[in-house]
Image (cartoon, rainbow, N blue to C red):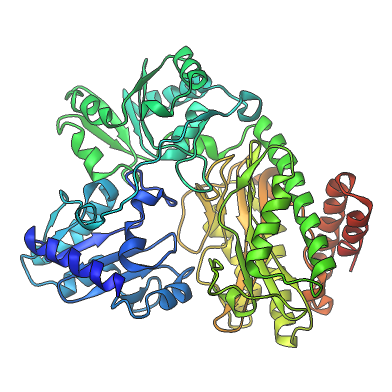
Length: 592
């Protein structure tokens, strides 16, 4: 009822402002995947809590579009809201621009707030709507008009990310960015993505849950760098560090005034997928815009040697936390009440005991039985299942460490499972190994290799409606581009030093879900007359549950990979474990 009331209030404001439809995306003013509470407008208006999705409200219809990770979750959360779910990515399901063009009459007006819509999104929307002469109004933040207790922009203080972890100072990184600017023949570069700014200046914040970033903009010229941020976020230490590296600190909203002073002789590089419509509008029309990916994005995607060494150490610590947790679970399951929420809390407890841990890297996904079929399930007091010595438990979790960000999924067998479940578990392991063993020519992209994971699953007429993997930040966002594994075409080459996840799965709605995820480092393998060949090295160290595997379905090569991986896990983790946990790990990593 509350959702319906909010929609009616929005419709009233739409009528007052002459809008026939209003679009509410999931992003903030920086096009972030994960946002502060202030920008969770799509969640507030719909009740759907997933990280991705778009709501469209007209005077007679409501729709929500989200991808395959959230189809099951959205279907449940939208019940009774009056909002229709459009399962994005499925055949014959129109995306919201096409739906608007089909639904609205000619000469209608579509509203959206330009602060939370990117330049490229607006361009694509205009192209879809111009066939019916539908105009777009980007001026009105209608949610702000009706959201009475809307949270404020966070004001938590920044911390410095020590160079001993970062490997390069902010001034060194700025010098590299300026070299790239010269190659692009631009004299300004505007960056609004929060993880890029945090990486560039070696600062971290607390504005977004689980992601240590702060709301800011930056403008870089050939000899100056401006950081636009709420000044009360700056501790004396952070201010002194930035100013000593010739960073000009200005108020958060001052970016619009500074941009307006550019002239027609200037050229500015912007990422059209990230720069908001409002920010773009502040740049004078005569200033030349060069549209490209942020120059910092590929730079931070390739980890330097210092970062890689800390990533390995952070994953060793994370693996120790995982083993301590699994040992605790095995010892206590059936003796005390353990639920999905208990698991999440206990896992965070074990992680926080490890050196340089700064908390979780995302809200733990802990799904027991059919809950695991929802790829991004989050247990609540109402949905919380108590664990039994039966079936399977999927745990997707991660930690933030000063030396890296971890993301790991393990599906574990708690008791008797069916032959079908064992088959599907084994297929997921085969899929994981198929990609992990890949040797590929330099120049390959994640979309070139994605099929290696899907093939064992496809052979049984199954699929998973999401990508196979994503890039990982460094004490930053758990999802970091530009590299990924996906069926969608990509032109991003997999380069030495990139870190990427490998996480195929099988999800059967109402029954169970299985996923196995490791992070992998891209390394050079060999060079021949045909070119340079690359491969992956695992940087996640944690046993894969052998109790779910049918060894008869694995090839000799797959068994060898699994045995070698488990040997590596034992070598990395055993020196850091107590005797009882070491013995548990020895059994968990036994040869098959």
